[in-house]
Image 1: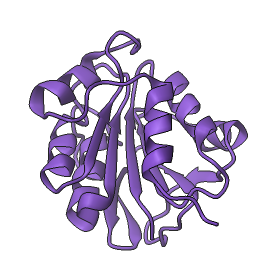
Image 2 (image 1 turned 90 degrees about the vertical axis):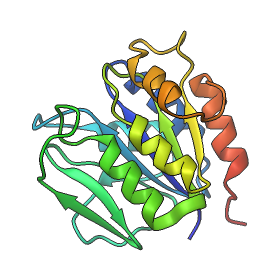
Image 3 (image 1 turned 180 degrees about the horizontal axis):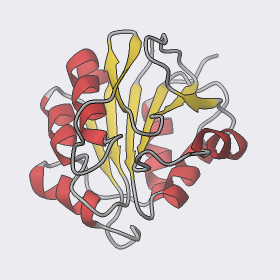
Length: 187
């Protein structure tokens, strides 16, 4: 199994998320997990991401095995966590006033996959993802944060930078370049 990429996105995060997904090649060997703050509202995010990029995107399902070259989106009103080799969904308490939230995903990914994890915090209006980013980098993973000047709502990336010391902030295009360079593709 390749790298595990976890992405936190909220207000203003859809545009940079689409830019990143568009840049992923069809032979990409990483598995991508996305939390968008949608609460219990219906979502078409997997359809949007599938149309924008070359990788299939679906809502994660409880107990589903993890495949490389796939994008998994947290379903409405469920936290998505990672066990070794499988997705775990739960309807636990809200984190940062939201469910799904990024911190449960990020922390569980760090615990299960350690240095194979790349955490990305995009635009958003609270501090979700900051604790999780710290867990990822503490276990040797890579932390990437959207440039504050580019983020429509810079509070989430700013919180990650305040709490942890990930790489210097990058634009969405630079984040995409960095993860494609960091993750091997299939032959």
